[in-house]
Image (tube, helix red, strand yellow):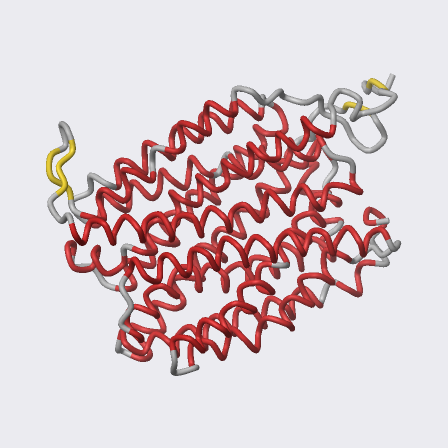
Length: 442
């Protein structure tokens, strides 16, 4: 006896309408998590003024403090996503990262902010492995690219929402500097930004209570026990020729995107004299519309290429995106005029976001159901350390230690973000030769 139970139709338990409701809930959660994760990117100057910290310390709060714990905890949480109730895992994580964001608003120094950002990383590490595993059981392969594209794209919407809402809040607080909260007392503008960013997480928890845990099954229609960790590692090593380029190339491209998200607002503030409220509104719209549009377009393009019988959509779309975005990434910081910089930034952000719907769907297409959460978690560990960690830090390190002048940040962005894009593209390209030898992509 094989230990598997055959099922005539592994998607018979759900309707298309309900499956897309699940996508909506997860997308809302992704927006909330990005609001809480990215709120710090508009608070660079007030944090430096109040706490006396450097660009490099800010980059640690933006990146490594979050990324290390997000990545490390993604591994056991990914294993849990393969064995436990995935909706319950996301609920627990959301409560944790919302409380941690609130605590950041009470910080009186760098250390407490650092600890708060670490726990934000732990809580948010629940969402992607469990969420993508859920979508893998709600959507057939030919529709998965769109679903993953919307889920991944919603992170850009959440990031953009953070810039718009926090920018508007900072503009309002500029006219009402003395804000007093019950019990807590008077708070600074950046403290109130953290506190308010924490609240939508509890609405996400309420929506999750309406999501059903789906049955687990593979494309064969069978329900298998979760794979042991050792089996997952052996599977990944056996398919390293295709997984390696995705697991390294996509995070490098993500690092370029995280670098721009972290430092473009500060670039406009320092270079063109904009207020945080001004760049928050504009950049927020850019991230929401162009970032989301780019990643959804990438997912749709991936489905179209796959429908044509090709097996390399998860590599072709990211590579194309790099070639299209790199010229704009290097040129927008050097334009010398705010309007021109914004014009060049638009295609950089749209094309730069395209890899993530296609590339992530490619990983899901490779990962068997019983080890999907673990494989995604390992990917997230690498993506967090390289993407969230290295991206913002590389810009700050170049500004502080090579250029030695915060006002020259435009050269840091042009140099480091472009380099990350191009190296990521080269790594992705290295996987193309392995596609035809990889039976699991057939």
